[in-house]
Image 1 (cartoon, rainbow over the protein chains, first blue to last red):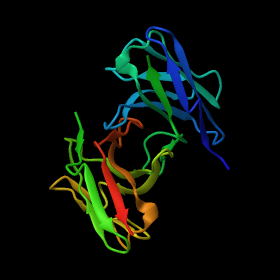
Image 2 (cartoon, rainbow over the protein chains, first blue to last red; image 1 turned 90 degrees about the vertical axis):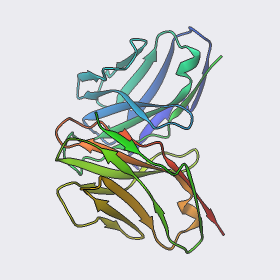
Image 3 (cartoon, rainbow over the protein chains, first blue to last red; image 1 turned 120 degrees about the horizontal axis):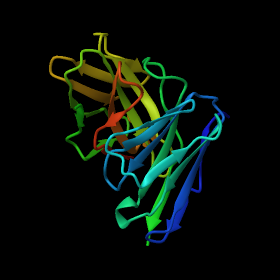
Length: 115
Length: 115
């Protein structure tokens, strides 16, 4: 089945130690998104890629970066994780932008713990 | 800036009964889309139903329907004949029709279904 895959499902890192989260998709979608969902809060968009074009949200901390080496893969890099970065990170994809039926398909998320 | 508010952190319903989840939003845009997403425990978020602001007719998907009141900026979800598998966190979300794919989520409503 076509899907959005996130690895690992659970990630533990130490304060200040760089960490990379991975997302892959078999849907061949143009757009890939990264959302941060802190405990009991709404998911919040960090950035998205439209093909190779990177689009950062204005309030995304510089500590968060992303790479998309090809259509299928997208990575979230946290350069120096702080305790406040502990959260569920959701990857999503959509075929395109704009139209009502360009729905977003979500992966299962990676739960990041910062010690 | 657009905001989405879900005022019910938790709801409970008896199996086979009907439940309505509330959502209000604030926007100055005239063209936008509204969504309800379901996030079961430890599983990925999936789209339940979608609505375009320009369409007055309320969307329906099997047991799920919405009551869209554009003037009141209200978008409630009705689940009929509730099933145990409906237990999940439900998020209301807004997406601008003109500003890409960013979803703005409400805080979520956790729905439990009693057998």
